[in-house]
Image (tube, rainbow, N blue to C red; front, side, top):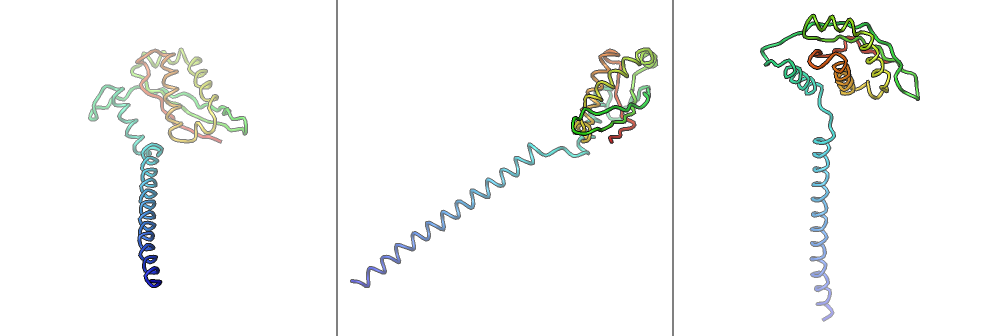
Amino acid sequence: MAEQEPEKTESQEAPKKKKQLLLFAIIGAVAVTLIAAGLVSYLFFFKKPSAETIEKEIAKDQTAKAGGSKGESRVGIMVDIEPFIVNLDDPNAKHFLKVAITLEVPDEKTKDEIGKLMPKIKNEIIMVLSSKTLADVIPVDGKIKLRDELMIRLANILGQGKLNNVYFSQFVVQ
């Protein structure tokens, strides 16, 4: 009888080992699933768009603003504004921003209006640029946001429909 008891113990240990192995397999599968879900959500929600994607979006927006299709391109009149050098709003360090801006307007009449409104336009540009920090202007999306903000502010001065686009012809941060 003493010999039969060890056999029962070995047969009882086999299901325990199978249960432990099954438990480790389930935990491993759950861990792999969580890691994969985390990676997918990171790539979907937090990854910045590529420069190519941003350029395509800008081109699509500009085409929509111009009211034309891809084959049809309307280039307005370009008005260069002299370069601006401003201090950035960074309390930890002194950084400078040098920007040359070109405005695209639809016609000669608007170009003449810009000449008359140039002090207001320059003031608005200086106020917007000097309110930015180094972190605001270094990334590409920061430059796009800055351009869009300038478009809105300058369109308020000139009037709606009188400003096609704002271009940075020079952008240097020091």
